[in-house]
Image (tube, helix red, strand yellow):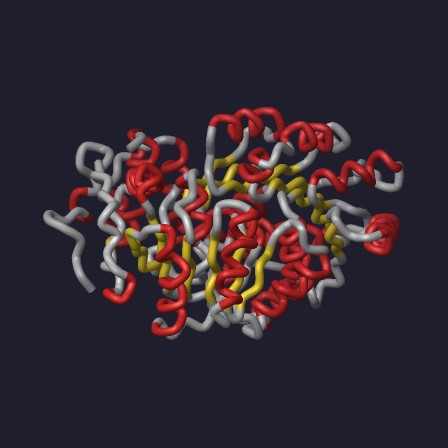
Length: 452
C-alpha cells in the first residue's frame, strides 16, 4: 500500500471513528491531501447541512425540494474550496456524490453573478452521463432560472439542430462529450470565450476512451483565466500530467481511493462457464432482488447472455452501442422507473448510469481492470444504502480476482454453489496476498471459504 493511501486511510478512519482524536495526528507528517482534510475539520466537527454553505436562496430551495439535507464527505470538502475560487483535483469513488460536489457551488456562483452568457463547460465521457448531469442541473437549479444543454453524438439531424439552437441561445451550462463539442466548435456556431468554469468529470474514463487530444484541443479555445475542476475515480500519472497542464495551483482531495462502499456485500462464486446462466436464474428467482445490473466483458458477450436469459423468461434488456440513442434512453428510463428489473451491459454502463435502488450487481465475468470492478459494484449501495455484488470467477479469471482483492486489500467472501448446479471441481482458488505489511490481515480467514 502506498504512503499516500495509507495516510489517507489513517486520516479518514481516525476521524470517522473518533473525531476528537483526529487532532492528535501530526500535521507536519501529513501529505498535502491530508493537510487539506485537516483544514476542513472546522466544517466537519458538527453535522453539516446545505444551509451551512450559504447558497443562494433559490438554489437552496431547489436542493431542499429534492430531499437533500446533509452533504456527502466529498461535497463537504469540495464545495468550500470551489466557492473560494480554487482549482481542484478531486479523487473519489463512484456513488459518493461527486456530481453535486461540483454542480452546487458552480450553480451558486452563476446565480449570484447573474450570468447571461455560457459560463460553464462540463466535459464527460459518455452521452448517458451528460444527460444525467443535465437532468440534475434541471432539478437543482429549478428555482434559479439557470439553463443547460447536453451536447453529445449519436443522434439524428434533429438532435444536432436542437443542440445548435441551445448553444446559440447562450445557455448557462453546456454538458458535452468531447467529440461532439469539437464538431460544434469547428462549425463556428460555438464560442467559448466567456467560459469561467471548466469541469472535467470522470477524467480517467475520458482518457481511457482516447479523448486526451480532444480535451487539450477544447482547452485551447478557453480563456486562460478560469476556474478548472477535475473529478476522477482514479488518479494515475497521466491524469496528474493533464492536471499540470490545465489546472493552476489546485487543491487536492482524496476520498477512499479504490475502495468499495461499505454497504456492499461482496461475494464470489467459483463457476464453470456453463453454470453461469443457471446461477443467474437461481439468484434472481430466490434472492428477492427488485433491480439488478449484469456486467459482461464485451458487447458480443452482452448480446449472448441477453439471448440466454431471454430464453429462460427473465425480463431483461441488453444495453450496448449497436442500439439507437432513443432505444438506449428508453431502456434506462424503464430501468430507472422499475419497469425493467434486469439490465445487462459492458463497463461503459458502469460509468453512465445513475439510478438509485439497485440492490444487485452481477459480474458475469471478472473485469480485467480492478478499477472497473469498483465502478461496476458501485452501482449498488449508493447514497448510504446497502446492496449485493456477486462476481462469477472461472479458472481463467483467477488472476483477475487476485488483482481485485490485492487492490481492495481484502479477500472477497466465497459462496458455495447450490447443489443443483454441481461442483466446479476444475477451479482452484488463487491465494490472496495482502498489501502494506499485513494491513488487511484482519479481513483474512484461515481454512476454506465460509459457508453461508
